[in-house]
Amino acid sequence: MNGTTTLGSATVGVNGTATLSINPAAGSYSITAHYSGDALNAPSVSNAVTVTVSQATEFTIGLNPTTLSIPTTQSAALTINLGSQDGFTDKVALGAARCRIR
Image (cartoon, rainbow, N blue to C red; front, side, top):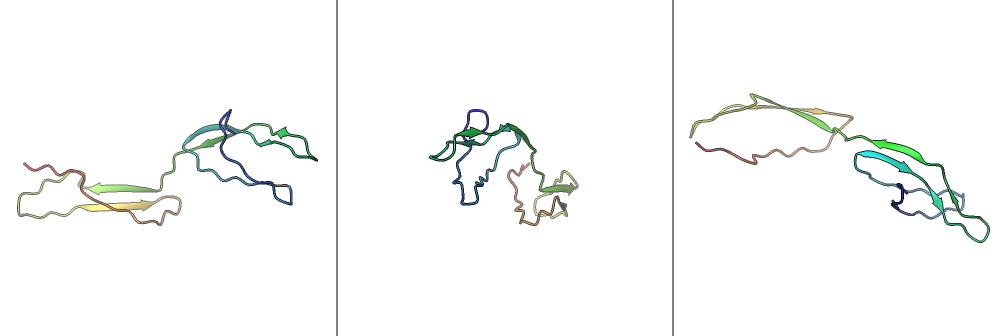
């Protein structure tokens, strides 16, 4: 749980452990584990653990030049530099979201 918000549930295995995987957004969380108990074991709540999740930076991008004007029917060169962060190896799609025509 994060405060009073349930993050999920997991079944306790024969070895007495349970595993729950979550994918939280960036922020700070106070997480506790709650066991509802059974015929042989009383309910219990763990001590709170504070977890801070930071925003991941997967890649950097640099443009040279940072702005570019291209006359009609002409072409120009633009250098795009992508840098991997923390072993990022996925594909990056590039496109023009908005082109100003003068």
